Amino acid sequence: MLAEARKQTDKLFALVRPDSLYERPIPERHRIVFYIGHLEAFDWNLLRPQMPNVKPFDERLDRLFAFGIDPVDGGLPQDGPQDWPELDEVLRYCRRAREAVDDAEHEPELVHTAVEHRLMHAETLAYMLHQLPFERKMSEPQAPVPTADVVQQGTVDVLGGVATLGLEPDAAFGWDNEFNAHRVEVPSFAIDRYKVTNGDYLRFVEAGGYNNRRLWRDADWRWKEESRVEHPVFWKRAATSWRYRTMFEEIALPVNWPVYVSHAEANAYARWAGARLPSEAEWHRAAYGSAKGVEHSYPWGEDSPGARHGYFDFSGDGIRRR
Image 1 (cartoon, rainbow, N blue to C red):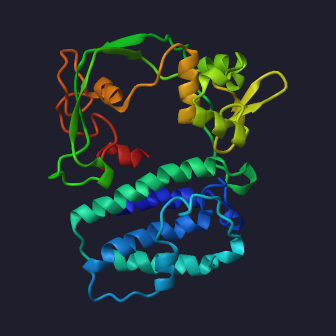
Image 2: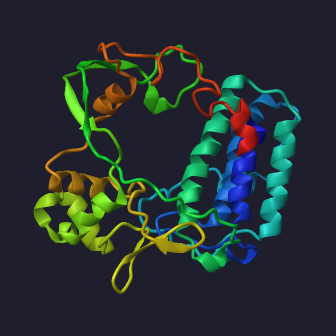
Image 3: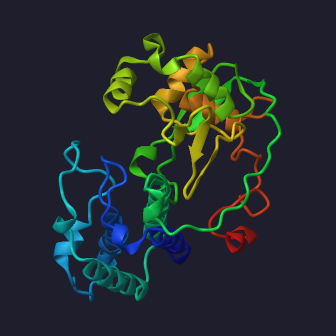
């Protein structure tokens, strides 16, 4: 499982040109080189107590790469590329950490933690590298954008009932903010059948939604004004149309794709549309509730996860196709 997760993050780092690994695509985040070291340092620091006969080989880098995704003081980081170790030193550290981890047996729960941590970073790295300029990445061949049918929007009625959020103390694996499980009574409600599309959101933009103060909560408005946000981050205004910035190229805005926005923008759109965003309990109820109001263990019912239902636990045909 850990090897498969490593393949995903290794592939993401390989997209970055070597001379751009010290770039910072998002001002609030660390430089890319930090994450190269952090993923291995996390595994090493997590699993090292199970290796009493293995001595630390670079405690300075253990500490440097120990802390997660954001700078600790809440402000914008001020470091420069010269403040980080040379790439060769970082890669040597990563290789030694992997070798040490792979040469020992580990508790399954700790391996799950390492895998989940790496996959969460894979998601945030994809978002970060999406914002890296095209010329700083190794472009890959792209499939043609498929022609999608017009989405026929509508709503689905969701019966009221219980939504179980979080995990029980005896769960095999979970993060600290997932404990303990609690149950919420959710009244009946209606929810959109499909996600909001770029085309839907474009109407909000063209109606002046980004300039309508009444649609935005105070903190959201301050963020929008301070960051000078005027449209979704991956949209680009052309002379008479909108363009969409994918990972490697600009294309005409695909109006039937789901829109990719922040929570603040989504909330303002919902107000403009005369609706609101679902609560966590409502979202859970929409996913796990049944037509009879009973809460299922999985969105499809009670069957265990497997290739028939999706891509789970690095098993089934899905992993070989990716």
